[in-house]
Length: 126
Image 1 (tube, one colour):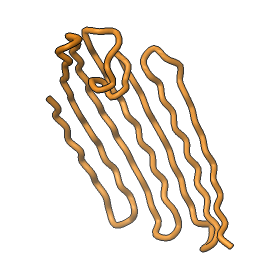
Image 2: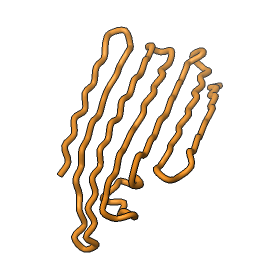
Image 3: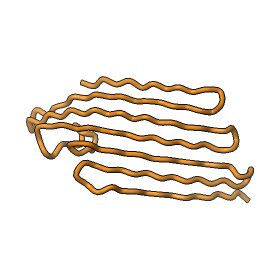
């Protein structure tokens, strides 16, 4: 059973915001595993026509289960407990032939250390 709702708001000035909320109950009869997932995913973006875009998003997933280890199909890869994901992206057109982007992501899975990943990219067209 899965219940979810996704709400999006935007305006004519380039701003956009959204919120995804989900509740999932699942079970695996062969292993007698039951799992419950709750997710909240807020996001925001700003864009300027032919100039660039900035996006940020965050995801919180809470997983409970009668088992310590869960099949991927029941937990979507999340561990039991609190799981967090976040990211920020910026892309910008400096000129018609030169653009760049910056990307940062992070994740904190329950019982594991935090991972941070960054990427910088520049593109020139000749």
